Length: 305
Image (cartoon, rainbow, N blue to C red; front, side):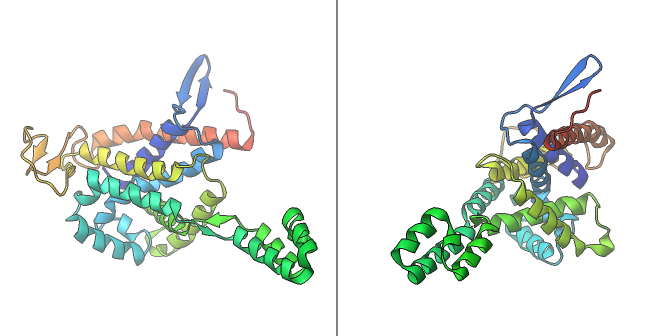
């Protein structure tokens, strides 16, 4: 599959998993989303950004591909390293083992948090205790840092503007995923490739400000995107090395399993074929419909058709 097809399929898969909408056209109603994992209206939009980017992540094993140019020069370095580690294109990163490794990485990045606001608040509380004594300590703990000295109050005001904790690894991975989608969808011209950093960071901050309302949303979005990518490539002529690094003599015809490595069900033919385009059109329309429904519901608007 081509990059835009992967991104569209990733966004559509997230809409299908999390959307809870119905589009009424005249006397016909069309459900948009299965509602299997409700994440709120903002979460449908922001999660789709991550899932669309994750649907491109397996292609980071191709140093000459578009994804490798998403965040120059870092993405190119990652692509070269992954290509060696994964044994080439459509191998390690397109396998069940690779999918598991990516999901473990996403889980670890979601667990690796760093306290920010809370740490400043605790620091300010200790400062207030040292300055004003035990009575002021009680006031600082129960009523906030504004009851302490001027310095500790300033620290408390600064802490109030910060989240209790941040996830630096998840943030870095989110920027990479979003930049992949931005690059593949050609939102930024090649001559301005370094602007992908700016777009990725801004959209990453947007996702951080409006995350999906589910404790495991990040792992699910990354895993779902990668799985959709693998399924799409499996439907092409080349197929994927699904059981990498194993090469087993499976009892399958050569049309479905070649060189004891690549599993394929070539319903779409070669990547970029007419059949792929025919699939891409309804998938893209479905994803756009879901995102529009989420955006309209998020803003509180009502649209009747």
